Image 1 (cartoon, rainbow, N blue to C red):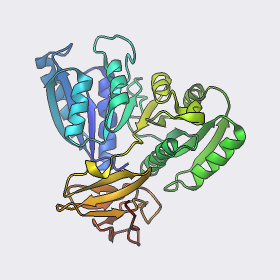
Image 2 (cartoon, protein in one colour):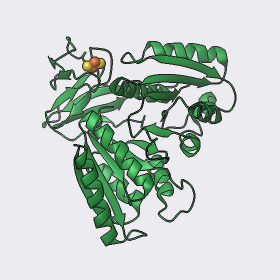
Image 3 (cartoon, helix red, strand yellow):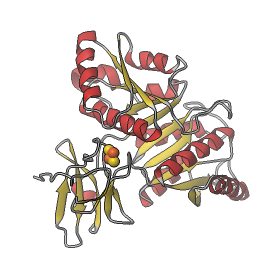
Image 4 (cartoon, rainbow, N blue to C red):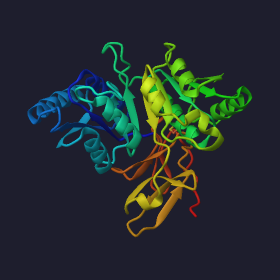
Length: 343
Ligand code: FES
């Protein structure tokens, strides 16, 4: 959840201006760099792209966030996915206008393509009145869960974001009310941080119910996992994020819940990796030696993330920091990270 590089695509449209605003606000909160991307060669001409980027860069800098701009010829979604991988981007922000429809700039098509294929989390900004937009300053976050590993991972991100932004969380389960009561209690009990949480069990069409709750007026962000579920649990997230992203009346964060593996780490770098369905914080030394740690911060259980600049494990929630061997050197945490096993 500790976003360090946030990418936002822009073509100068109103929806893109909102996306840039949200990316900037989140970047300031996380101390992240905003990578602004404008693809040209299609509806956006090269000269227009130069102007659009200059305007966006000034807007981001004017808010006090660090930014880098990128201009490339090509299809916007392709350009963004390529640059995201190249710059180690962990969040892409896009506007939702025209999603699934042919519009002049096809930004909606871009949002959809990016949402399905991005190598990282994707925040889809619902286009609305500029003055009424939360602009990344979310106060009320909805998380849909069925208790599966994917949904739990999305819930964890939702709770961590709530902790960082000072938001509350509405946990929603759609399905059998008895199962839902157990799932929601477990999810709330094991949450990182101390965000206020309320739970709702609903019956009916899962995506439809989630969209309904999101539209009640007291929610400004929906968090869903990016992986469809298999088997008997398919009912909840099988059509999510696609349907929620299409139909939500508020912004949607699609949390990437399928992690990297140890093999994806370059020597001299660390990162959270997926080991048999568990998240492990792993540092890979230049000689390939691995140091594996539990990523659970010893303060209130948020997830630490690798800080490549300082080669440390940092917690985004309240600022605890650990060296690459997991020794705490900055509180409020008082204990070192627990060691973890690798197979
Ligand atoms: S949970 Fe508070 S600093 Fe990590």
